[in-house]
Length: 143
Image 1 (spheres, rainbow, N blue to C red):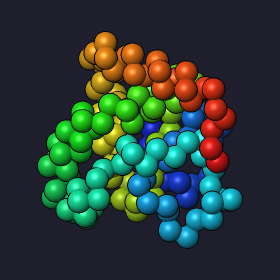
Image 2: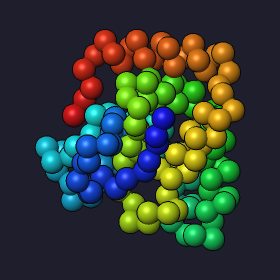
Image 3: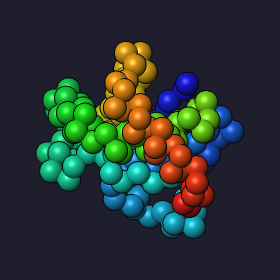
């Protein structure tokens, strides 16, 4: 499984696989008709308070990741929806609008998912992912 973060303003590539927008806010200057994504998971983005606290300040990156990972741990439904989307393809592209390509929540989310794949997931999370997978596959993906 390949997980990669990518700016939503960059053109889609053949190897992107499932393209998931992981921003809570709609990207500035991008028309919805021009956006190329399969799923918009606002719920997986950091909370508004965490996003504002971080403010893309590199010196806060390590602390931001810790706080965001705790939020993700407390958000199994959004993670299950993302895992279900991931099962549809061998590649998952996490789309974001931030200018910083190294210190943003999509990079942190990719790290979280990669670590999760290495250690495995618990049974409750697997059941939720299976439910979300069935739910998502019964409805066409939003564009």
